[in-house]
Length: 194
Image (tube, rainbow, N blue to C red):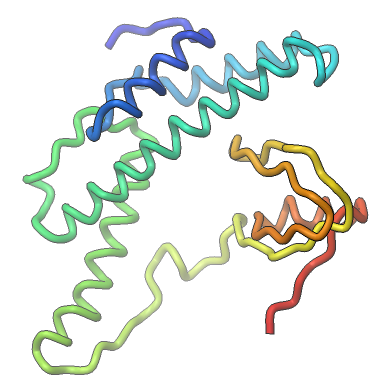
């Protein structure tokens, strides 16, 4: 696919195609890099978050998040298929380079899980589960349960995911880095789950 300059309409078209099709749709190989450049350009034009440009930037981030999440779901399903029947049955031609590493990690974990749980169980043996490579190191995306002490408008996380809006007393499970900011600003408190 030839390089296309990104615009709001182009992004919306990509999202529409991902929604309408079960398979991964073709995107420019530099899609994620292009979106970073596009967001940076749009941010520079925003004088006020409540301006037309500010609202459009929020919508752009929502569209990019939804494209990612729809593709992520499709990749998870493909990883399940590969773990069951092997890679030769799966077409990954429309997968972006960044997505291939996600696919590889998911597939490895699913295969390990099948070999440690399903295979021994079918043989009449007790499963023994070890830690997988992707879960052995703590993630920066660890989550925390918090309770909101005040109303908080919708906000966008580090990975362009959208949260909220939240009302006083709402409970949410959000990335720790975001939760800590809300706690420091006394907008929320951590909920200890016993």
